[in-house]
Image 1 (cartoon, rainbow, N blue to C red):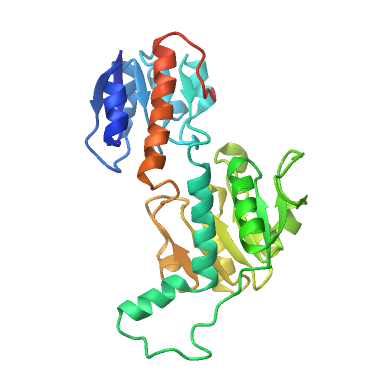
Image 2 (image 1 turned 180 degrees about the vertical axis):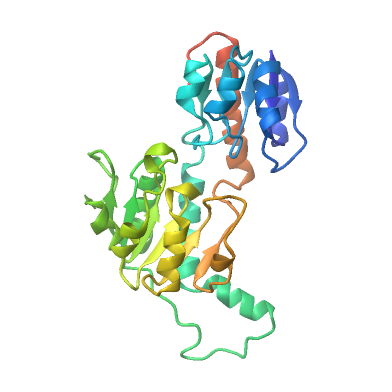
Length: 317
């Protein structure tokens, strides 16, 4: 089978893929598939390993009425860039890589909490600019993290991993909002309405991306936050109405934000970049070699299952 891998992958992943497929790799680290490339991938390859930003939307499948490709083995747990219903209607299965990203993404959430609350990015910028004048009792006072409360929006694998870190690592009280009941959060926690989850000292968004969660966090959600509240997003950028977030920050209605994802990646609003109370990371949630290898090997396992006519281990559509 001919396999298209849309971005450069770790060597271990490429070796595993090449052992079973006729592989073509686009030689780019971050360039997404163009509209023409999206359509050609469905016509010219048996299977594709796409990733974030490769937008297989309904119009792409509409333009390729009889796709040769029969599987999009997505590299990543999030697949909101793929219209799963349109793919299914075209006879194209979709898989993802759940589990492999859980701990790494939860770690980044805690890093953003600490960086934003304790003003770590701001402090490093001052030091590197040569503007640090020495220690002082009132220098760069931030927000204490231990013993505070956290509201987690979305209590799936990643939400539960964040809750464990917050509760066991920092003694935080955990409240969470989830669209369906969660029988066991893994730690002492309260399932509450969205407004109550947003009203905690720290708020972390960990819901999947997609049509159901687009702009889930907007003006009403930010209005429920404390003026001292700190907002963290490690989910998908378009889960948050970026304009509403900027307004809440600019007007002082919330104290700060830590973001690893953005509504129109890789574009980041200049207004956010100008704010010292905002921590900005370039989508580093899973950026560790062993994690990316595990993601890739899971995607390859899905591809091999398709090759061998077996049930797809991580089918989402």
